[in-house]
Amino acid sequence: MRRLWLIFAQSATIALGILLAISLIRPELLPWRGGSNILIQEIAPQNGPQKLTPLNQAAKKAMPSVVNIFSSKEVPVPRHPLMDDPIFRHFFGDRQDAEPQQQSSLGSGVIVSKEGYILTNHHVVEAADEIEVALADGRTSSARVIGTDPETDLAVVKINLPNLSAITFGRVEEAQVGDIVLAIGNPFGVGQTVTMGIISALGRSHLGINTYENFIQTDAAINPGNSGGALVDSNGNLIGVNSAIFSKTGGSLGIGFAIPASLAKQVMEQIIQHGAVTRGWIGVEVQDITPELAESFKLPAPNGALIAGVLRDGPADKAGVKPGDILLEVEGKAITDSSSMLNQISALSPGKPAALKLMRGKTEVTLKVSVGKRPKMEQRQAVE
Image (tube, rainbow, N blue to C red; front, top):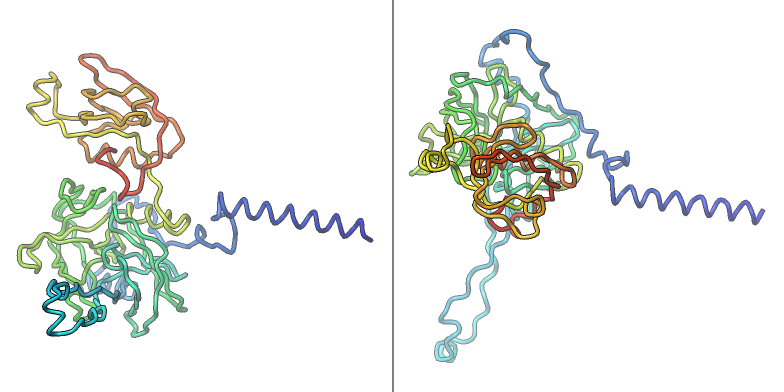
């Protein structure tokens, strides 16, 4: 009997050890973690032109999936400089600092799964102490932050309510300039609102809004409070998450920017599975190839990214990359500018080798670099 008990105890200890190792290395494999098993609705690839639905039906389809988000946080009140003056304190007493003020903000979000996961902007929930979500059907719920990604301005929060209406992801790669789109959100806190416009441009970057930029530009009216809301196509499928506007007055001037749904989906899945986003990094500082630089380097076109600096002992340095090299391709994919280089490097898996095609002088060079893990935003320098 004692022998059987020892065998049982040893087996239980080994099993617990295995579970502990899995929880630390691959937590998404544990069924009760549930992060990697969320169900996301996506439309199937289309062989021909999509059949367009009336816009009121598109809005009716998407609106139940768009929520209002109210967040609040305590902000300390700065101490008045006179309170440090001993003469002032002698006559007026040593008064205590004022109580922290409650600062509120509002935004929007998109329900992406029936499990209660909601996509929104990082700046909507940043440093929030409390988050409340109001659904289109009138229900409200407190929410908790699953994770955020400041470099794309995306965040995932979760609520626990039954019978949620999850949005259907569209195929943003099939979107074209001139397509009709609807922006759904909560502008100025007036309540859920739908505005209409067209896609004005695709692949907008170099705006200085986020680290990773590949925006859909639209002239659909987007105002403060729309952040985190849905940009849907004429069939009511999600193609973007509204993120920013260009405005000198604070109101809509017909230039709004949305994060593509494909990028939002990638970030969301990593946040749900791992709590954060892991990106590739090689440790170089780059700049765009201007027509003047292209002429001086005798390039046929101003394509590629100039390596302006290499981090000592970084992955690129160890692979032999040198300042002055021009990066032409990453894993066989052409580099058009520094923005495309940044996006392609970040998509690489840390710890795996990647092929870089470079122009060094007049000679093309191919190097293998062992991709590193991108440092956190607050820790990194101006190197990619």
